[in-house]
Length: 240
Image (spheres, rainbow, N blue to C red):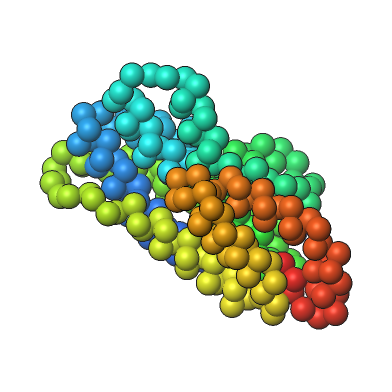
């Protein structure tokens, strides 16, 4: 099989997995670009921020950071808090990204929640190159966000509407992804543990401070229960 055929086949296999993300990312990206425009920023800001930051939540928060007094340590702490979950995504993808060669740096940079979900759970056909499949999943999702943000910034001045409440779209997308993973699993041990620990941390630390404790708790519990979960998986269940 030629290199061109390999790449094209991987693109065709990856594209259908990203179509649901396209709708959500374009809507959110357009909203972000319009929000930046309404806040007084040129379309260059959402265009370059979506290209080089590629972290939707942080990009929305960055609007307020750019409009106020700049506090580097505060911006760093806030960014780490918002995106701390990517530390756990990275650990989960260590084996998945092995052998991807020069594509690996971009796969690491472009690993958003949606790309992680697809690349971690997708059943890649045996005749499709895994590295190129993961690359196109990441690239397409990146392009959806970048193009939506840029167009929102360009045409934002032509539209006037209240953007309050649009951030819930991201929550809705996460719920859909969780449900899709739930339906694919035969055993739900990890999911139930994750939900339980998150609820406990939410009650203990409140809505503004539960994310990091929940992540650490999930990591610790799943590490302790790794062997029983793997044993259950080997018996025919999916213990992830």
